[in-house]
Length: 269
Image (cartoon, rainbow, N blue to C red; front, side, top):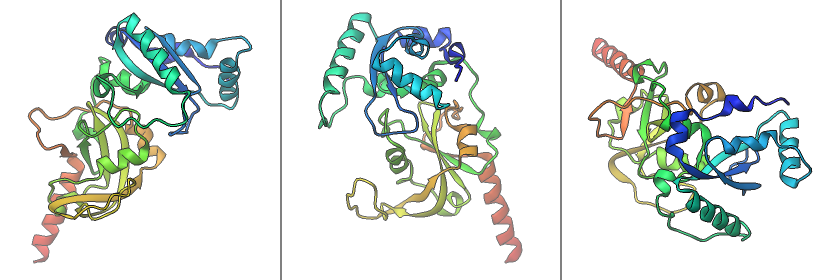
């Protein structure tokens, strides 16, 4: 497979904000596995291995992935570093990955802002491109900002659990939203199709912790959206109305659907 590596490059405005960084290569489409390569660099160094020649295990692994018609998943583990800091961070990451399992419960310093993220998310967070206007989203949806709960590098299941509840929303309006967009630092990181809204904390989460249902708050259950929806929105920067305090924001299509149902109720009374 011929890869246009330059098409993957960060723009100059992204490069300047990334500074030095530590990056990792993963097998594509696998979420919870350890990376097969850790490196450090600046600029567009993280993409150069796609052009490497040689007989190292790293090169052979990348070639096998490319020959299968796919591209390795590249994530930035830590950025915003000075060069000497990146050197230490790379060394620590390699050392830790020799362990079978880590039990750390606390994130490292700066992980929320500078921690693990895929390269497309970084491009959107730091890039100068215009954000997507919420009113142009053509499906009834609710955008849910997860800035406080999201940990960079979380699995889809973990993103699902922090996105789906519990929220202070009116049930009759929420039920008009078909999709939930998980938004982190102004970028859509995942999209879920909503099956139903229920009382807050009334359903089990993946962590297995039993919780008492919360009155006057709701949560949704559903599944990851289909690929056609995800490819259209995941990774896109989105504008957030100035002064919006509620982490949940409805799209225009959701508001229109609610207005339609309200009219039908009034007309049928």
